[in-house]
Amino acid sequence: MFLNYVAVDLCIVVHFCVNWVQGPLATNKSLLEFFDWWGGMKRRHFARSFACCILLAAAFFSCTSSKEDCTAFRKKFISDIGWDNLQKSACLNESEKKTLADERALFAHANLVDVLEAKSVDQVLEQAAIAASGHTASADEILAEIAKTSESVQQPPQSGSGPWIIPRAVLFLYGKDGTKGDRPLGTAFIVKVPRSGDPSHILRFLITARHLVDPIWAKCEPPTVHLSIRFNKKDGSGTALVPLDLQARLGKVLYVPKDPHSDLAAILLKPQLFPKFGDYEVLDVPFRITATESEMNTVSEGTHVITAGLDPDLPGEKANLPVFREGVVSRKNNEPIKSIAPCALVPIEVHSELLSAPLFEGNSGAPIYVTNGRGGSQPVLVGIQSFVFEGKQLAGITPATDLVSLIKDVSAEMKVQLDFYQGSKKD
Image (cartoon, rainbow, N blue to C red):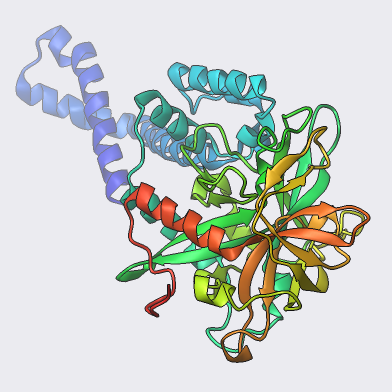
């Protein structure tokens, strides 16, 4: 209401100025005559003044609405807007339009335009600005960003979680190369590690087999594979295939062990990696259930293990449907084994222990558990599935000790102290 009064007064002042020039100022009338004249003008031109007020109010609310529309526009995903509409939009200045065009050219060169289109306008501009400035986010900045995703992730029970958590805590990894469509590749899962002394700050990592996300290391031909993670939607309406950006504009997110023969990779889950993270059904695995070195020493030939992962022929149409498997450790290895990825022409040497079970390549990256550890109250993570040896009913296991070493290296690199076993003293 206050703004309406201001608009009315402004209309009267404008009208006064116009009529002053046309009336008494032009004819040198006395001040008394002017006031008589002005009273008559107000009566005769009230309708015009009121119309002016309406126009000014409409302009004000139009500007406010336009600002709100632009705010919503900038939060939209590029795939929902379209590149042509971006360049025509009045919500972007010329510099921003050029930045978006440059980013598109950069990503198109790497065949990663779909990754860019899965981000909002503001996210792309922000990441381009960070890349141009050469700024590297500090550990505190990264933790603050990642804390935003905490409420979106389902939490497993603190005790009595049992084997039920295993199939629910895995995701499916898809890939495409050239003109081929997305095809199922393997399995991944999310682990969370709280910061020491501040459990509200949590780092989350997507864990999988290195040969799935690092095709050059696996000697794949061709080496370019565009990766996506398939999530179940939280509202139960199906699945979402989300591009996995490991190279462009996010800073370092892919971490691998110092041991070049370890088939293991950890991807730091920054919010920009999955902008719609809150829309997906995600159950993370607390790092505290990862086996310690002394617990790994109790795993031997004949130890029963369980896992759940992708069957490439039966991934599920309306939801990710992991296949639950059981097996036994058939041999503990002290030397590298020559293994070959499905996309490779030559083998590479990997350090792994062997699992005897009817597994398939889609299980690569799946978590491997024992169920009778720590009193049998919950599964203990003892490894991550590596290569499958076709025709031999054997698959490699990257031991959990490699995962512990890797996350400790990441912690040291980021200069962040993490509470790996949540207060318990473990080796």
